[in-house]
Length: 319
Image (cartoon, rainbow, N blue to C red; front, side, top):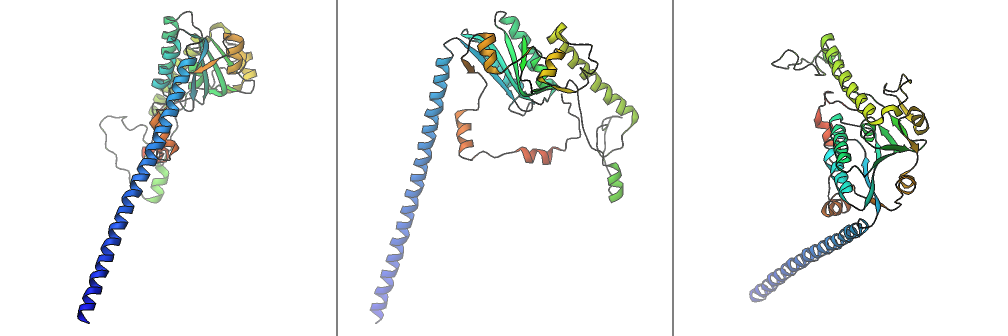
């Protein structure tokens, strides 16, 4: 009886050991096949994007209209930042087969600094390539910083319902002083410099500091106006008192104000103005690995977190 029990115990242990080894082996094969599947998808995506790039290169070797897109808010930490836009513009101007360059803009505006960088670079490129014209086409929206950049173009086109203009400057904040008093919160903020905390939303606003900040906005607004006047020249209808008031107009109104030169789409401009119907996109795109990770759902959005931790007090100017 004791021998049979020992034998049974031996076989039970052997069975467990063998079963454990089999599970371990199965897990290893599972990991291997998952890795193999990932490498297959990665390789397929790489070949696909590489093929697309080669196709684009072939298109660039024939006469075409070069297109660079500006989508969304113009800011250093956004996709529509000066480095990205300028890189596309340089490549578009440099290619001898591009008959003209076309900026397609759909932007509510953003940083005056980033917009200024792009405007200045366009001016430089136009001098460097005097025989190559640059056109701007406003899609749904070409406002503030978006129009700031468009003003650097030889001509501007838009749809009759596009929104154009908003030549002004804004800086927004909140004041929590009275709320803090009600809830019994004491603000402790130590600075060196009389006006160092003048934009702090938890400190009382002072008349002198308000006047100073308004002056900063007014000077930036004048810079914006000068850029538009430089770009548009005598085409502007300066008899319209509200032209630089920050108001926004549709394409039909913008045409009468001299803010644009005609009504038309990117296809219209390429076909009828440039006379090179084939459009090649020079917009700088995310790399193949970035596209792949986004498609596989690996990338993590950070916009919400940025809003939570930024604590923006309104110190940023926006066109």
